[in-house]
Figure (cartoon, rainbow, N blue to C red):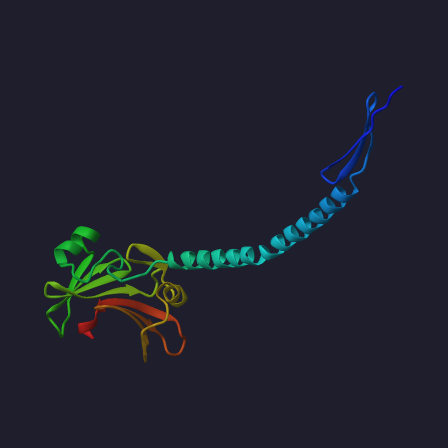
Length: 204
């Protein structure tokens, strides 16, 4: 049987063929070695990329956590003391009655006749003519409304809401917001809250 052998080089390999039985040998060692080397290099490069990408991810997570804390902090109410127990320092007697109803008693100061007190449960509204002189809450008040938000009528609760007092006096601590002042009267001996006054800064 006549046999033809064709030897050729194709992609770095040597192939032998016969006329009847097709390929009889095939050698791929040069190509295989090259591919393995490239695969190892690619694997190492991929490993380097994964390691390099780890740090930015951690930085991003820390940044997001910090921003979330700042957003949460910014949601805390910023009290401006525009009203206390629903009363504004710019209300007149008629508007107070409209808001709180008829007072249980109205009294005039025996020494300063221009001062008139509208007495309500746990709160007195004192007028000087048609203008509010002060709003006074008794020591047994459980809560007060500041800008429509209820806060416990305690020294700690008010400090937590308004922050550090603007200044201190011999008989208490004062929080100032523009022309509005909120003063907590504190007994010097017992350090207990005795009353809370809301008034204009010019009335001091």
